[in-house]
Length: 449
Image 1 (cartoon, rainbow, N blue to C red):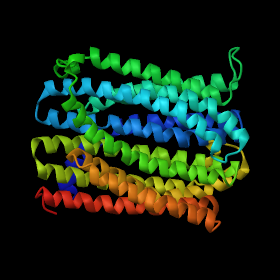
Image 2: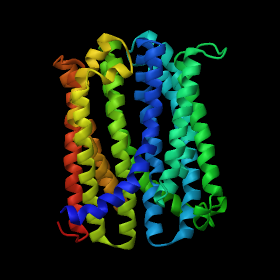
Image 3: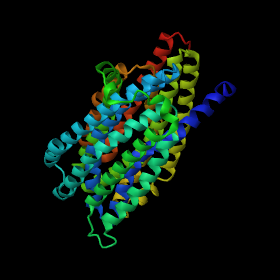
Image 4: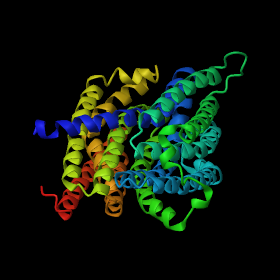
């Protein structure tokens, strides 16, 4: 088996590692915000960041999911060597994503900012959360522009460029965050708002940089010959949205379940909410790394599907399952073994550290389910199968996971631990059903078992 899969392990890892690092950029922005605020602004401010991130992340993943509609289409057309169509798809995706960013900003600014007052959270937490949420809301527009060019490049197999930009962007975000929050170089300390400003500036610079690079780089010239405003068409836009829309819902169902969990935990107390932010932030890092493997699986699957090389598709898809299982086993051991150490990265509050350490043991257990379900989604996305997986994610998280989280956490008074037990069961159901769906699609394409 090793000799059969070894070439696929190698090629998938070469493609996936830069994507993993790039995907990490989205999470590390919020991790940096949490670390900076936790150490320089205190537990109430950290709880405010937790509340905002739990709300904003739903909007962010909806946008990211929409942008993912471009990747499998680019991969398939590139597999067919239909380069001119790639430029036309990019034109349509840029329009869709920019408009999506504007719409999401409007929802955040004129909807969520008003709703946040009625979530039964601590008034001190809400007071600091609202201006931070407003700044993150504006940042979603340049983020969507960045995602357009990122998904275009990655769909063509150019994964290192977005990785480099993400790394530099995170360094900029951390430096500006410390300066603004703590108040250095004569700047008045801004508290939570400081990390909001650093994130907005960082995402704007990243969007400008990647757009300039792709338009000017000779690597993309064959693909950009038909990149123009006049190439906007209803047919291509619908092709992108038919994939991007369901993908956005898949991510939204999962992330909104975790956001709902944060709100449930917020009713228990600020310390529990801050601990949830610490644990979920660490779990999100490993999730985004698995999501990078998933993105590579989408690209490889899309290429093979475009060439109608279904045997190659099956071997590549199976190897991605192997890779993510091995990776998540390692991260699970790290979470469990370092459960008392990792929370200290975020805070010195002993109560928060104690609660977070318990949550990290549970997070270690659901790592395997989280990784396999996101890779399953990526493989199915490469084939173009997005509707049934969307139904699966809705059932797993909103019919099973979140209700059980409330029952275990509040009704049975198991607290934050109980909430996470419910979420773990939702991930288990999602992982199992998506794997069955993948096996079904393999048989449907007459690939064998």
